[in-house]
Image 1 (cartoon, one colour):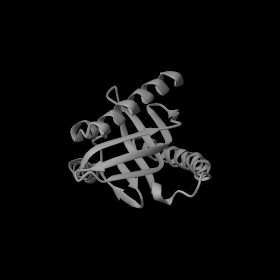
Image 2 (tube, one colour; image 1 turned 90 degrees about the horizontal axis):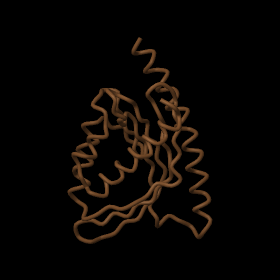
Image 3 (cartoon, one colour; image 1 turned 30 degrees about the horizontal axis):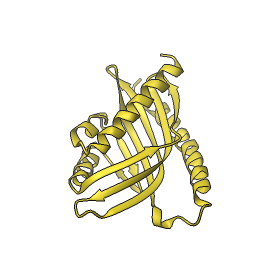
Length: 170
């Protein structure tokens, strides 16, 4: 598959993933995560396997009336045979069941792997900051710099993961 084709497929999968979150559809969200012991999420200092993440997603979705957000700029990097990295900064608005609104932003990376003809998430690493921590108008530039440096760091992590998984599968 050509790099441009991989980028288009992952971009579409990311849009579908965001739509599942906006729909608070736990089963659909969970369907994006590979069912593998290698699946890991590093979220704000915690490491979770698939089961723990799906449980957390279910609890979160049950507590919300709505979630909205966007990823921009979304950068997709094919890393080799059947693996790609997506990275972006994001903004998010969560409304809980009592009508309380929380706005936050952060950066995220997602490692996609091709399994049985389907692109699935095998690694996800979000990092969030509450909107209230923003300082003046300078922060969006800092946010962009953080996103870019985080994406570079996660690209190195994903490349390391790819090397380890190829060695393990030999």
